Image 1 (cartoon, one colour):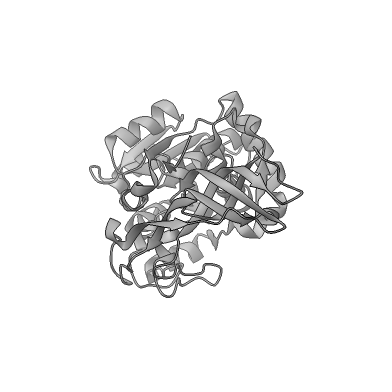
Image 2 (image 1 turned 90 degrees about the vertical axis):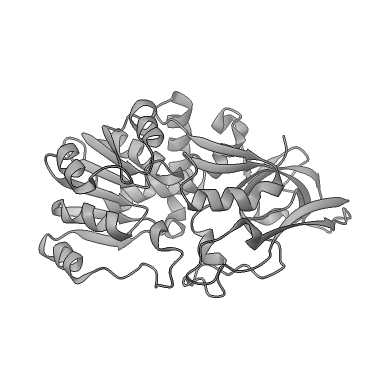
Amino acid sequence: MQVQRVVLNSRPGKNGAPVPENFRLEETTLTPDLKDGEVLVRTLYLSVDPYMRCRMNDDTGADYLTPWQLSECVDGGGVGVVESSRCPDCAEGDVVTFFTWPWQTHAVMKGSVLQKVDPQMVDGHLSYFLGAVGITGLTALLGVREKGHVTKGASQTMVVSGAAGACGSIAGQIGRLDGCVRVVGICGTDEKCRALVEDLGFTAAINYRQEDVPARLKECCPDGIDVYFDNVGGAISDTVIAQMNNGGHVILCGQISQYNKDVPYPPPLSEEIQETLQSKNITRERFMVLNYMNKADAALCELSQWVKSGQIKVLETVVNGIENMGDAFCSMMKGGNIGKQMIRISE
């Protein structure tokens, strides 16, 4: 059968911003003759995420991330439906997901690596398995729980950078549900600020492109900052950390402002910020969700309940068609998405 796939056409270079031309759409032939243990899946949704920028380089800078190879099919989070199976654990019609799903319209995969999911967990919104009730939601929930030390009744203030993105938009809502009295989001447009406050229940939102961030933080966080969910790094993070309280906690989730630069991960901090962390006894530990997968099942159940009850609202930016993967990825890297950036491959 003829299928379409996306391959890595070129690398942006270590200090280069990615462009859609780094990706190439190809047609290829798939042999539907399955071996024992294999399944044929039709792709429904694919995800693009900031960490993928590291995989575009020869060296990802992280031992747990393998680089994408030139002229080879790209992969990432995906969800699809089983069309035929020679695996006892997968039946035709099953909805399945996988962290390294090939960017193809159809694929032959080993059934043993696929995770079967129940559409009722997301009220039929299957894309949520790549976002709020998937690895993104897990990152937000377990990040807050493991590194944020949010305590009900402690009158804590949380700040989230990249707050209108896939992870930040969920993390801020979890901070509120877990007991923060004030949750402030930092993002890049007035439209995103409105969505955070009006749709997601953030206390306030700051447009870093238009507003004086230090002054607005003081205004929005009159009692200082106790918890900082960091998705961006760079100057914004330095500004937030400078206003944190003694004994505060930084959840080091991502550093999207630094991903196009040739720096180690996590990027080094200035001496001044290191001194602030030390003198105020602020914890700042790298958070990797893959280290906490023993807690994933319980966390996904909790996320599912919150999403179904409406306590967590889900924002998505959905683009149609595998031919638009490169455009969607580059748009996401520039902050063009509100919530999770998704590509719908088939119905």
